[in-house]
Length: 340
Image (cartoon, rainbow, N blue to C red; front, side, top):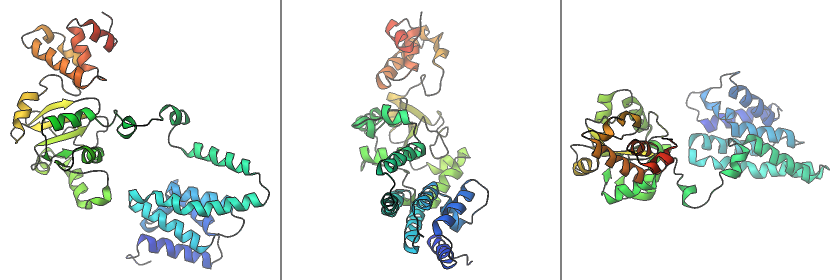
């Protein structure tokens, strides 16, 4: 097969060959996709879309539901949508949109043959629950609406956005990949993000450069030479997050909570903010019990001040409450769950 065939051409050609030979297309798609997904066979790059769970699931439903052969057009349409969804994340819903009428027609044929429609509905609900990546209980307990649903505090920080506005942090910044859209939504056009999760919106070389630099501090320093501040994801550290690549001798932590950390270059144009707002003691990942002796020492007042600030900026946090508890704050002890 020529090397220059595109993914869509490869899938279309495979479908055509299966149809011409009289093989049921959805059976071929299901069997080959399942074998590739389970690792039983290694599919070539052009056919890797067949092992996508969406494609396997759609082919399986069609295999069970259709008493007649799937038309070539239906198969090519579903496979084409699946290929686009595989290549471009934001087009993934196309698979459901294109496959829905095809599946609906087959389900209608089942009902016409005498199967109780209520049984079809119950089966569909059961399959949806079984295929859900989220536990059933969470589908109910985690149901939410409003700002908390759009900006889950475990991942996104509204406090950090307020801090950035108040301190006039603007221009180019480095940001963890999962925070790009959040920054654009809240701070554009004053802030220009380094990356976001729209992978198709950037050249592949951009992410390759980030991944390569993540393995070397000098390379990372070169990568972020043009930015004076960064906002990093704390619960989701990875090679696109910048975690561990902003050492304190060059960068000051000026804000942090359970979701994010904001660091500023000490010698950059936001240096006054770094000097005035730096957390010198209570930084992410530091054990607060290390300050048991220092909380009443020469730097005790500064440590306690940082703890009070941390409690205000990060009310869901633990570190500030622990330090203030060691400073004999009974309310902080209760919040930290410490019995004195």
